[in-house]
Image 1: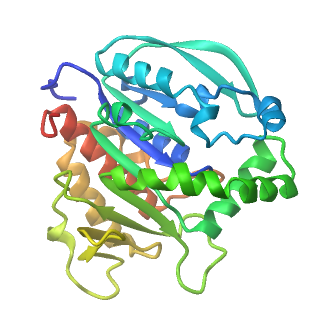
Image 2: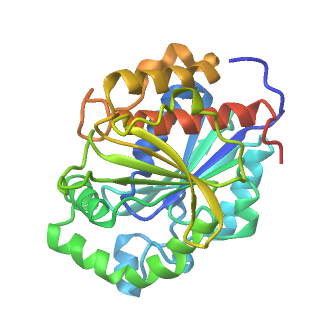
Length: 310
């Protein structure tokens, strides 16, 4: 990596509903930047109550009252200042709170979870903010798969939990979308509603709060190009750029896009084989996922160079 132009860690936020793909995206970005240079923080670790206590209190993990928001704020500020923290740890496999973890700041920090943008104090700590908003049916399938295989739930329990959390998603998770620099949405291709892996499409809503990479050299406008960029209006009516990458993007076009993005972050080019894999996919490559990870890594590198100084 080149000499850094800022003297503090660069912090990326990735926020979204449960099973929106936050951990998969985080892992790929860390691989690009170099895992030894990245500290990852999951805000789920700041739960006040374990699984049993939440059930007794009839409160969900998505509710701010179920989390130590003030401690999240303190820890983000400390990490931004280059100071270590003693982070709580929540064990998803057992639903219990366990021994805290000492976390030393590294050049890059990725903070992923449910409530990362809940307060202004937290939002002011990030250099880049991402909100994950996958197709809802896709997210439900991802959640069922994850929670039944890794977290000890039955399918019926997962579906009940989703239903019970609807008010908290509406009141606390979705409002955070408005604070993101980039909204990332994975969705199945038309007529392939059951697709949940490498052939998913992805849509990036890119707001003018960041200078985004110039992809015009590879956007030839052909209808079968697998990638398109257009000016549109977001749900609030404000103008945004919308980048769509199709799951069936031709191999040659995907390589051209990847080569362009790697050329913009040459410091990480030796790690280019580490992107695009997904949970359960082994070494199967998803080009939309790989390109999404690269675009976000690009923003992290540029922030480290002082381009996005705040």
